[in-house]
Image (cartoon, rainbow, N blue to C red; front, side, top):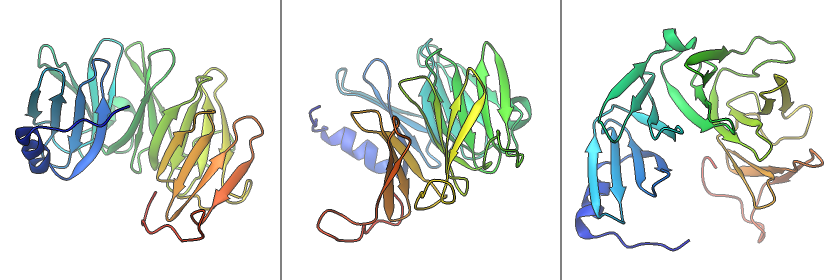
Length: 239
């Protein structure tokens, strides 16, 4: 990947839309920027185009197989936006079976279905025009926490779930089985997980406050990192 310098007008646009809550690169290489209060900003370096679409407080963006952008908002559920026609469709918590309209995270599964996580409202799965909700029930095979802060899809098609106070879970959509990794059963540094990602080998990087861990997807062992290689404590408040 190569860094690209933006022209003055594009830089001015990006400055105006702060604070930025989410960056998403669509299938055509265009950058979509979810912002607080200013909706979504669009920038295409190839076409030198930039504009804003006022969709509210946009926390997360995912693109379906038809080119629609599903924008999770801070207070209005999910807004589905078609970039070609400009049409919008809004899904509120009641329709999705969720306990909150604050949709914080999203991912697209291998089969093209969509998953969304909320603040204090659980998680929902959209497939073939229907929503299926998941809530924390206290049962062993259920969502560990209703605060779902990050979602990713791994190479095997599992849904990786980062929660605030429930650790990390891996959901097999075929079997419906949840596997939970937390401070008590696996040595995770904290059950408050703010981010997840993958390294080149497919292992899961888990971000906590001021530290991170790696979950080896083959051995299911967690390696914890509290400092940099030089021994310095991470200076950020959340990774």
